[in-house]
Length: 151
Image (cartoon, rainbow, N blue to C red):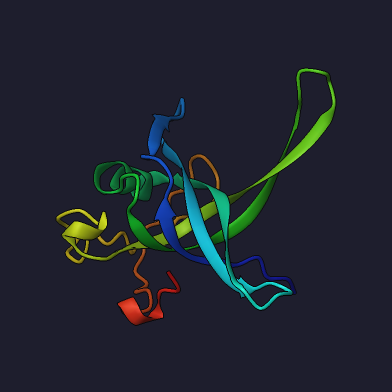
């Protein structure tokens, strides 16, 4: 048995960019930042930002395009996926992205969440991976308060 599960709470680094596959399946891409606080060897508080490439498929991609924007605070569940490619010099490279399975918008209107941030546009559906495998379904995410957010 194996598990590939990622949970992130962070802010979008840019607006989602959505395109459609030949079969009409929506796919949205955006970057997301998470922050980590730690103390260095001198005992001083430091903050490190990690950037994640996010891919969202199907109906959730359309919801992301409509409601998310740069700065939006979201809770996201997904899986890590690697992608191999060749650079301009012909060297084999590997990059990693998070394939979003569901997300929830957090925060209020003034927090980058948009007017529907806590309403019916919470994007609670599940998405199966693949270009033409949209699988609608329920699945409520955890309730997260502002106190749970580390930044």
